Length: 251
Ligand SMILES: [Zn+2]
Image 1 (cartoon, protein in one colour):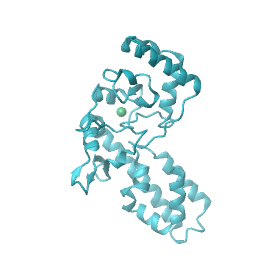
Image 2: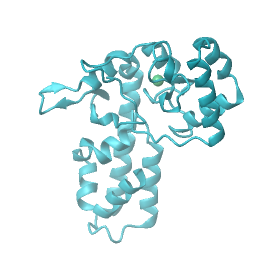
Image 3: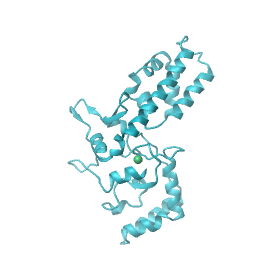
């Protein structure tokens, strides 16, 4: 998972969603209204915008492994009838993750949601990645000496995030990123000032990173603990300008 930016909807779509929510608020059947509207041109446009938020391959916002196929209600429509047509409550999900989640919505003792909304928070605040196994685990909180409850809740609900095919996919992305950085270092290794890096190899590095921007791992290796792993650490320490340029492109 990775942090995603939610665009503002055009006015016509905002009005449409407000009207549909008003219908539900005034007693229209939630399931029937949703099912009927899901096929409308306006809702198809909403789905298209959601699908595009993870990039051209329209990946599921949770596993980032399969193509998303449907609109997911972060707060399930079966429980939160006042959130059914709320834009901020909509995510994009694959059928496997959708089945895993169902209508579950775990909360902590004070009623705060335990699930992670990737459009409102950075999943890496609650998760940790092991490049050797390809697995993600709940982040260990040094202060409380406990595993992140949000990370644990996410992994308990989405078994899809622990499927072997998904962990293999993460390992492959890690190897691709590592290869791209190593190749850059092999070509530019003699100049550590970061001043005279050839435009060609810099462009190649950017493209390889963008091509491997799956599972949120680019953010892990360039913004999180992953940057202390080799060869990322060497790129950061020996080519600070290149490192900054990569970070800038991630922003
Ligand atoms: Zn999924």
